[in-house]
Amino acid sequence: MQLEKYKIDEFNHTQQASHNRKFEFIAEGIAQVEDVLQKLVNFQIAIPSWALGTGATRFGRFAGGGEPRTIEEKIEDVGLLHALNRSSGAISLHIPWDIPQDYKAIKTLAAQHGLTFDAVNSNTFQDQPGQPLSYKFGSMQHVDKAVRQQAIDHNLEVIRHGVELGSESLTVWLADGSCFPGQLNFRKAFQNTLESLQEVYAALPENWKVYVEYKAFEPNFYSTTIGDWGQSLLLANKLGAQAYTLVDLGHHLPNANIEQIVSLLLMEGKLGGFHFNDSKYADDDLTTGSIKPYQLFLIFNELVEGMDARGMNHATDLGWMIDQAHNLKDPLEDLLQSVQAIMIAYAQALIVDRTALTEAQQQNDVARAQEILQDAFRTDVRPLVAEAQLRAGGAVNALELYRQLKVRENLIQERGLKTVSTGL
Ligand code: PSV
Ligand code: MN
Image (cartoon, rainbow, N blue to C red; front, side, top):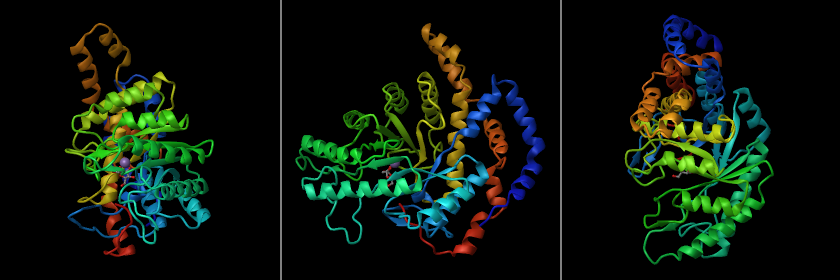
């Protein structure tokens, strides 16, 4: 489906007067509003190729229709999102769920939609048809060197795909671990993982980063070899300057203080990227900001503070990605909501009065510090985000326009009701 620019303009025209009123009201109270707007315009969140279809739980999958059947259709879907919000200008591929064939054609298609290729992701947590050795007992940690080698070779292949597409980072998430006490020698599992990762690291192009993603549990339920940020950081430090930790918001034990983790990883120069989602219990993969928006804001507050302290570019110096499953909602609507939640949290973090907060902290003025943070969090910054997206050529309300234009109905007509997308 092609989304003509005039349709966005027409829609914006109908909303302009009401938007202007709201924007002018909030803009008045914000110092350096132009700077904030420019940061919002620059900020882009990568969309995972594996989350454009309906997700499943292990109890069933209820497909919604019109799902992208090919990598080209996935790029078109992300292109639609980006045309609407101008904040999702990148796609992150998972190999082998999405194996690019004709690199040139795919790159051209992506460029037509204004998209770049974000991190490429390897998959050694599933066995693929025809694969000689099984990952049932792990991949990079495996007791058998041949299995480890297979996992290493797969990662090298993923890097090759990424190089062709212009990606500049590899995300490695391993399901490796154990389900029962005694199953694993923890030290050997860690050492095998390190040595395997070292071989992958050695093959990284100079301008590339590798993100080591951690996860507390699932699919293994007794131990996970890269189970928390400590283990990930240990590996990243041992690997070298191109290795970083990746924080997936759903990968922590309940009540973990993710904002503190983020702050310290940034301080160490070892925070590489993010996978956004939200959760009530564990790795629920729900819409970002749908359950704990205050936590999302607090994380962004640390990101902005920590990145500024190191002189980092918010838009380009970390990898920003969504990693979600969409079991109930139309995946594209869910992704629009998620991107918006991220933009809102980022905008709120940008308007925190940092000078006042530092002063309050220095004076141990706890109540004042809380007021300063909550003042930003309770500000309705939606008109700010909308203004940035408008200026970038997007819609003043992407979700509303998506519905008005009947995008899903159009996709169902084009692709059919019973299409199935690769991915989760
Ligand atoms: C694992 O739960 C994870 O967060 C990793 O990032 C995977 O690559 C992704 O989800 C898809 O399964
Ligand atoms: Mn993830």
